[in-house]
Image (cartoon, rainbow, N blue to C red; front, side, top):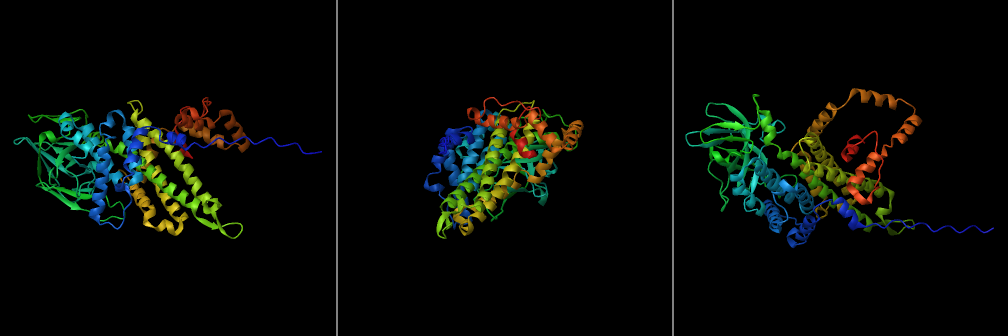
Length: 509
């Protein structure tokens, strides 16, 4: 008897790149589109064989072009922080040095002035920050005090007779170190220093606005010393410096006084009550911009990772190797060696993209009730994304063979960029220790005991229990958050994770 005809296979759903782009780029699509238009100009083309000065001026010119587009503002931190995060991701696709100068101008310097400053500082600086007419740097890290910044030595003694602060670097270890924009371009520095009263009382670390260069000719101001840190292993468009203050006098009003103030009659007041010897609580209050900075770094490196993968996939799809018939007629992307190396990187990048979108959304909508959880999320996302970016750069360089070793293909840039992100604004491993500490503090011993007893059961019993509790709903819920109508509209709640958090899936996998 003749065999019955097979039913036609159902057509697989069409892949819609534009729709997926909307899912990955979850917000501020107009900003992303406008910046991509900016980067179509000749100024944004990769350039090589440049001197150190030329690299720095190129990064400066690119950032100026971004600012002239008018699509981001430091004031976005009040209403739409995700717009700034989106700008970081897109700018990093063009140039890592540009992205780092952006994050210092708009987040570390600009964001600190916005949050810690008051009207007098805002009127002086905010519009100039947006237009790039007033360039700033962030003077927190000192040569001797990286992870233990609360111990920094820079001082700001109040002289009541002249109504001025005297900012001073007392030792070599107290010089401000690795200060982006400091070597060439910055007019102002937000310098963190111990506020010392006339009677010798140390009121803790505060931010002070110090003009280090003239606005017109960039002349270094009296008492300010700048040491150019020179060539690095990469990211040489960034002008890093060490700064030294030799009893620089600034007006009393240059204290960023949103949380602490010193009146004209010499009375100090602070919203942060702290009677400890080191005034650690006050330091944590003024260093808040490092939190958004970690999300900015993750956003930058996510953009860099996407560029690296795009280059690798394009090359693998066009590079021909020996096929089944012995001819060079088969793209290397068809080989399992290439697929097994690249496909997991793409999948992981999608996962981190969803997690990063989640963290950005939580940061923008945080309140007093969930602030501590947001801190943990922001701390966790930077190490996860930057470590992944480094691994992607290394693996993709290898999978592109000799072509991957050419500077024009930008794998070296991606690798150096990832390593800068792994160190900047908190060493990755130190930050992850903080994350582990916070998570362990929430562990309930009874839950751990119950879980250990569950895992001691036969696998079949574990699987049946898992099916009944529907653990996959946590994943479905996380995807639903990102995909909206593209995902299952009715995911079942999970008894194991009633409040899905995509970052948790990464942390515990």
